[in-house]
Image (cartoon, rainbow, N blue to C red; front, side):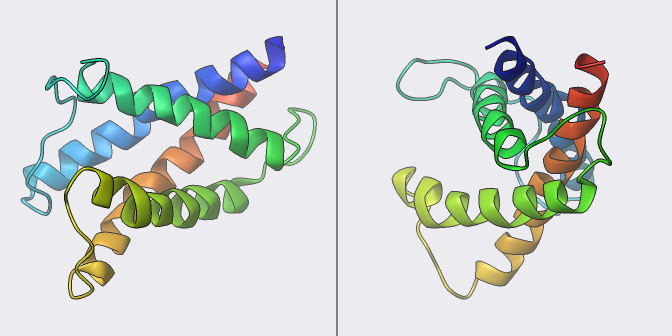
Length: 137
């Protein structure tokens, strides 16, 4: 149980230290219209958007590291983590989360949204094992 808690913490911290800073960089260059660390309340609990994203990052981090069979004494699965974050999380966001939030699924915007999602979620995917390695030593 402690191991899964540390996996959760690694994914949570990866959102704060990898995903959100990259979002800030993309926002500063006007690639995306939304700023990082958004404090707007989210449905249904009214948590700030960045905290909700970090919570979900923790859940996804737990799942990813468990599926990869992650252990700190083995070579790190950097490429697998990058691809899991970039592909799996982005696909779930575009196919499920965006429509649930009323953002729609416009096929003309799909390549651009997928690319930006791949960058952001891939950064999270790389950051999660960084924190897991540090936390599980």
